[in-house]
Image 1 (cartoon, one colour):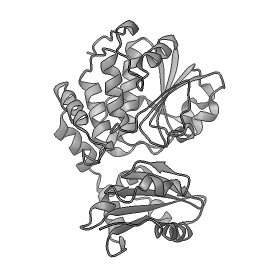
Image 2 (cartoon, helix red, strand yellow):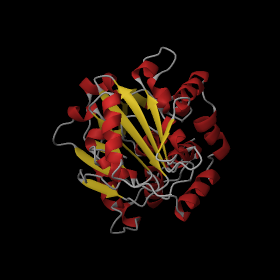
Image 3 (spheres, rainbow, N blue to C red):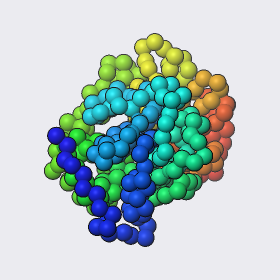
Length: 340
């Protein structure tokens, strides 16, 4: 049974860079809220979406959760995952007054649902990307946070919201995945302290880690093997290139959702400093996922193609088929020195 939320604006401790009071007041005045995160959802996106929805519902708010694409199999265990509805189910009947956008540096990253919003809808923007557009009536951007999961925990703590076991699982999953299993440089002592508190609240780290990273479907393992068997190593082995072609993605054996997380394998090689994963999409578009050990700053590299992200994990797209996109990207890559 969920703990009842106690929310008192006059009891909050407000910091200049943490607009908790403003967020609380806007939520308090809202009646019907839409909680969104980015397309191609990962653990941080899904975990925080569901956790925030649980908090809002505890306040008696009417909440809608939406997704544009299929949810990867590895996240199907998350409590309440069935609440996130396909965009086609609600796009023509959306009735909301407030949007909470989580981990969307650009509002367009939430997908086509944005085109359904009227101009008078209020937006709360919560994100940790350094290239956030600062949209919305209230925005909380913390580029030093390891994840939006960490930020949402801090917000809940300030609101005196007692986190139950289900919410602990959601937020632990969010932090675990967006820190690369606590590997990325954004992982701080506070990150680990919060993770510990979530474990105390009921999150089982082994169970969650197994479900996200190890309990893979046979088709997923075959897909990973297919991609890794064609890995390319350049720049004296410091850069690893992975490719997901249309031929692979259109196979009946795999689903698009199974490709989530494959980019992480680009850094598994000894001596590899930079990982690049090319994913060919219909319409002649190539998505590129970047991973690094801190050098180069892949957020800057992604920005050269209109993308963005973090120092160690970022992404972008090139409106060209994979062969052409790959050539263009590798040409630009020559300008970014990868140190030993």
